[in-house]
View 1 (cartoon, rainbow, N blue to C red):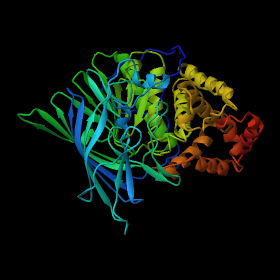
View 2: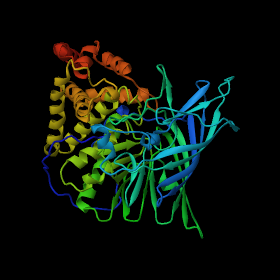
View 3: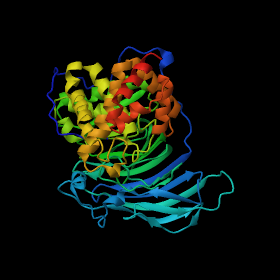
Length: 512
């Protein structure tokens, strides 16, 4: 996610000529082909199949979900994130006010039936506001798949968050029941939080059948370009059948006919920017070109983007931008601005396709891992695109990193869990600013290509899997030929007394 900070950025640049046709992005000069990571197209262990009907007038989604997976335990847990916004959630405080906005209506998801391998097992909720579904499983005698079926009805909340709607669109992020992760630390059953992106999920394959009323269109984490679309008469329904492979979640946006896509290509990937017909065409073109150019740049720097589509969609929301696999939400205000901030938001969410999407991590306990890399990637992309236009954004992040030194010995660091942050400002300064500036400082010392070789290795080692801070420490230690702990502690733990050790480590690693 990209969360705006209260800084005014002065736009520097020229007005771009508007071309709203489909054309390939020629991009930057290619790196040596041997340095490009070829992403595997491996089969995911988990699969989800859902059949849903979306009522845009009532803001209700009714459906059935089937999950197939090999159990790790005698029970499974599904996150029911929509129930964080139920009527009895009692959300209060400044941080929740940001998420909810001034006008809000509750919502939530109700599970009406659960079956395991065809046998009804009842509905057992967990969590303070039923944000978990606990499912008992039969005794494990082999590595055979288990099939869990459930019926659900989702009342979409109205607020300023990742799952809401306005007069022309409904955006659904973190809406489907999704299996919780069980890792070395046990089951990760963390509640939805006001600060950060409180999510952690494994890759899976999805097949969705989505029924809409006539006059609506769909952008998803799947492949709409090859979706099977059926129109029914006299019901006047449109049914999409959409697939997505090896993705960490499945988000979607339903839009009315005031929306239209601006399309282009990067290699074999279709890039669509969904905007409204009344939007300023120059701003739209700038945002669309940023999506294409950043996707191309990151693919050359960190590993080829393995998916065939990428959708950037204008929505509401407090978040500025919010990442999902092959689909990102961008808040409406950035399509109304002519400064560089809109480009930064799009570039940031695009970088998340690598750091969160391809390489996952625990975003609750180690948000610095994906957000720091993502914001570093944003800065380096913007700088190579336009040094003058990117200057204010980069300086903002470096200023945040310096401001974060004020958190030394205050009990909150870039490595803190999301629940430890008192407010969005501290989260911004530490998780975005401090962690992003850490990578920027390493780039300044080692050079872009030297650092990006290391990051390509990171993607190669952990693609479609989870990474953690310990593995990053090991990678940097191997790259530098010396223990990277002083460097990481100085930046992430705000251990200012380790500044000299951090600098010495960078200098040693530069010559390895």
